[in-house]
Length: 231
Image 1: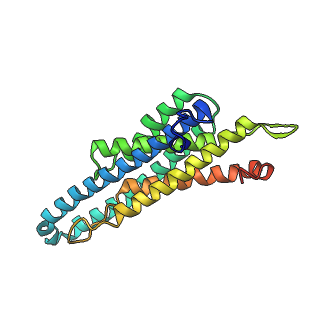
Image 2: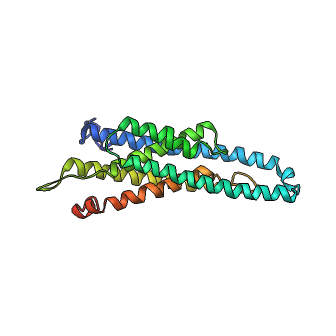
Image 3: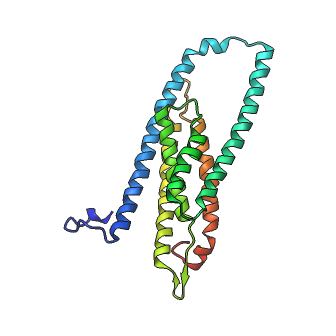
């Protein structure tokens, strides 16, 4: 934000688009900071209940109960992984659709977001809402960064090139900020048992980043060859 360098000029050189980009970047930063706070709070609550149930966990279960628990865990994890992959594929399909802004946000929040993060038992309702919001922001940035760039006789159209560069910068900011926040949360020693803040939703978000960002990077190969600024 160059406005801090020159107090006599309160306006940005890029006008409204640059103002909107800075505001969107701040929204990403604040949302990820809030995510770290609710993740730590949820992990503290989980560690508290784990300490309460230490005596119960020491009791030896019967063979039938042990087999049932193992089978339920294996089947449940398999079903969750398939559902997570399907929802990520739906999100990726919506990313590559043209137009439909209202429908896009509706699907990212109510269909894909709630489907991916709404069933995590370790998160409060507020934490689930933060995860859904961050996922929708990620999907929106990936959508803009995956857009096609039109060409003219002089090269790429400036409007398309600027939008793609801006989206790629926001995507880089998202990944770096989220990675740093997760390292701080997971590395915290919540209790004497060194319980980390890692949850199912953390793994789900990491899966979503891999599933959506990598195709976006590969899809920009042609534009990167045409223009070195995108590369």
